[in-house]
Image (cartoon, rainbow, N blue to C red; front, top):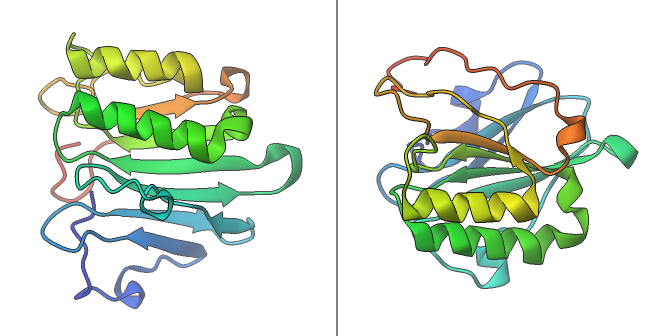
Length: 173
């Protein structure tokens, strides 16, 4: 969640050696940004809105990174509040947009669904996991000992490791 808006220019947050991709929310909070190292071919892909899936509680940024057999489809997600129905909408989007390439998928973000606690939303994530690939975060990602930040990999044989880094600035996860 970036909380960036039109009042923050790309030039203010650029990192040397990286391309910046943003999907700002139009009003308070939310938003997604991704930095991709220069030198990798990158293409922005269809969003749920491009496919007439309009959902205020689902924010995504989809990028195709790389080329040839090592190409990945990275989908960055922010779900502002726990909502099992939003998981179903996300799952539908992923299958419709990337179904034939789901093995190339990296789905990563702040889902605001605790993967360490049983709930309807978590069960729906697990159902989605059976279709799109394995969830690789197996520990707390937040000060409150919850796991809200998740990473799904379409082909677990291509996954090496998932590392949890300490929060930056004032983030709590």
